[in-house]
Image (cartoon, rainbow, N blue to C red; front, side, top):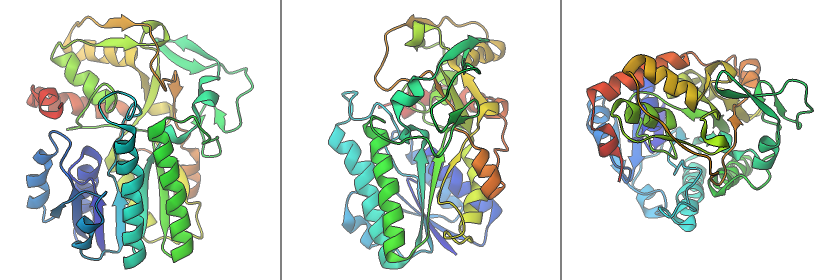
Length: 355
């Protein structure tokens, strides 16, 4: 079996490549990356040492895909993953759409030509913001959690946001680019007869992630805390009670390998894969964890809200257990510990991975 991983030099792509190589050394892996993310060049040499051939190319350019050999499966891990992309003054809205949606379209054309299966790594941010923001939360142990005795919108419960919750706008420009990519992937697969899986992931985190305040928050927070760099809680009273779930990308590999030998007509094609409630944490709780590991560091506060912020974003992963017999294997404390160990080994990591 031959696999193409896009965004292979990024955190998620490189982790998937390493873990697939570890579990299935018989599988041939090639990768594509444009290396525009600072620090991504670091992964090139390690991946090449594993026998993985990496092509330098940009998904937005059809000609860059024409030199790729045919494969059996494509794993699309290439994207601008920031919910603030297109509105933060650092990237334009057109750049975001060209990267996330335009790149997906080029890959779907490649899959059509080569009759390759397609696995899209999507996101929790495809879900409608107003509905999630409307749920009533309370603060317990410095973390928001939904009030039990409320009438939840359809698709939301104390277990998180499920697959049947609305994906109607507004979801952010980033979320919209992924919703559109999902829809086109399903249509291409149905029209041209190749298998498609849509894996909606919670926050992915682990050792070597290139964290920034708007993405890779667990890695960014730990690296910045250890280096005594300025940190502050933004929005929701400036107390850091907002909650996200956490998943290690290597936990996706058993699922992906199973999807590659499964009939997409026999399984639901869209499913949430996340750390769930058990692997979730607020920024304030993350600071407490850092304090226990690294000592005291002053955290600032800014109560002003940012665009697209939500107090509690946890994906309900129960369908993944029911349909795929899948559940996260790496506890959140283990994920945080490996991030911290990497941060201690690389004290300049934030400077390396920040433009």
